[in-house]
Length: 495
Image (cartoon, rainbow, N blue to C red):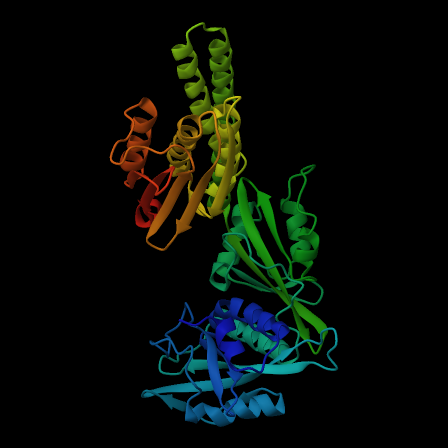
């Protein structure tokens, strides 16, 4: 399905500022739908004097009219005149009589979407139309909460038509557990006095330690009585509780955390009150803290493993220097190099908390280490890496790095022994496979004969056993050896 940005830009009539405004408005589509108990649709004009739907939100507390997504559809004939009038006259237009949609009586309101003046703009600009589609088939006597919710929706619709909503100064990308209308809603007047509190909102503040009714109380004074004396609190909390800024804050008391979001209400730029959405997020915050603790622990474990591996590598290096047997010295040197390669991977993992790693960064560091250790005094080896490995699951960075370490080491120690040459590593990633070639300009191998040493056995085990891939050795035409590795991407992605 096309995104809002794709649909808007395809009409060729909107700027980046328009798209950002529409994105912010669509982000509050669920709030508007829940307050209005109606479907909310956002339309933008097309080149052929029509309108296309770019966003649609269904209400969570009422029956939807649109069981099929209408995003990408042109405005229906029965709404076209009303939508066009709202757009051209820049005013809210209500349907004169109930509109029938698929045998269901509905009421439609068309609200012009006006973007606030930006730099270089002479005046606010009309960029689209929002329609509210109310299902009248389930009409019943509204409760006080429903009346208040509808009043809040009407205030926001008026702000949309006057470029007062959405407010771009409000924070984006709210934390997990952002409050919704159904979680708890408080309506305040211009002085910060509560005029309505939904049952869920009252319950949230009761759990914080407030035992009275919220209506008629100053929410800021209520918060002051809840907060423990001497404890630090969010500096934005007083402004949020007073309803003066479109910010978010958390309030804590008795081991309970309630998340708050304030939406100042305005009438042609003048503040007339505020909506405060609240939600008990105690369990969510506990889960977030546990995840942070676990991530920090994992990072520390990786860091300690890296340090321990580097210590082991240092001990192997010291032992290799003191041994008098050439065979033992070579074995210890190879072991030291392998441990060091694994330490590089763990060093990368300890720097972040992601499940994936940039393998190009890992391999560049490993490659530098390998060439320094493997080259003898009479060997001059140049390395060249082309292509990219991309991002790989962290669990499989170690076996791949270790396998490539062995292959490059063999190319330097055996293919380029006592001579000058080049080792090229070519990485090619497709949607289906990760293909890697390690190619050298050395003496080459007899076709069909692969060494039976420990290094070759390690490589086969890592590529075929750990990564479910395939590997093949063959001599290049002229001179040199090429090793081809193929790893199925579906296996890495599943990992």
